Length: 245
Ligand code: NDP
Image (cartoon, rainbow, N blue to C red; front, top):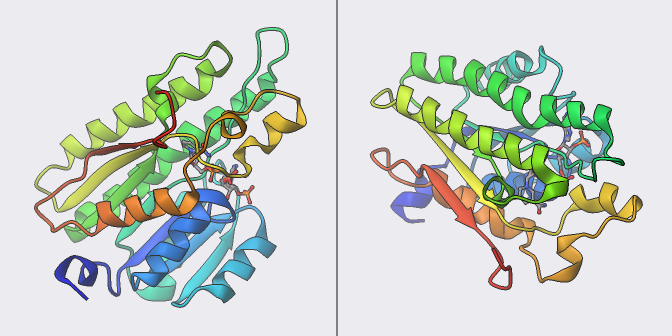
């Protein structure tokens, strides 16, 4: 084990959206790196099965991330179970897209609460605790979509851009405190996030071009977290080498 890998050994990481896709892969990656985990999403069965599979300690919290109480409950569960929290990965998210005439407005508002409001609340709750302890890391999962203008995906793109801007401001506010904040903006990644689009007959980028795998994104997240304390991986943009963005 080299110096960078030792950095994550014994750390306590909270991962949101861990029941599938990128979040599930991050849970595998961080558990293999020696982290103790708190994993959250709504689907309890998936979380329980994942916790049982992982090589290291992991506890589930089945909850909606857009419920205001969930952020504090995650912090408390980490402290109750492991005595501390060191890392937060804000990964839970959804994708609602469509044309002016067809887009689901209630779905859009749910996406706003999940992809932005919950990221802000969870980041603040953990950043306050991390600042008090003088150490911690927050990774917020953004998207390559933040840098694109697709007419059918404007709200998703806007929310991911807001995550980027918010995270940068938080990183700067916390400079010198021992708390690091970064974002990762993955390109198209083959996950269940596209199921809703497929069900409504909308075109799916992952079906047209070879996509990233969740494990690619997870290993980049691990790399960001393995950096020595004086390095802040502020923003990572990663796309499939076949993607035209
Ligand atoms: P998945 O649909 O596979 O995973 C989404 C995760 O978020 C699930 O674990 C889901 O759990 C959880 N989630 C969604 N809504 C809520 C909610 N209200 N409360 C709690 N948990 C919730 O998609 P991905 O793995 O692709 O997405 C992960 C992140 O990556 C998202 O932020 C997405 O925007 C981002 N991303 C994805 C890309 C892609 O091409 N796939 C590209 C760029 C970014 P459950 O349903 O059990 O609650």
